[in-house]
Image (tube, rainbow, N blue to C red; front, top):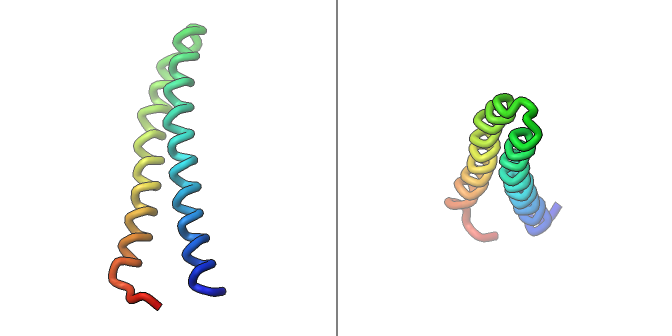
Length: 77
């Protein structure tokens, strides 16, 4: 594969991860709101929010850091 295709796939992976992370960041607070509105175990929704939000942000940030860290010292082909 050419370097351009590989770089495009890597950027697509990073972009997809951030889109997924932003989706989770908007879905989980909505989940907490709906659970509180319907009186349906808002405590568990808060537990899910406390656990998953930092996990997704950390994974996305790590993927981005690794990608740009690996490409920082490389020379242009």
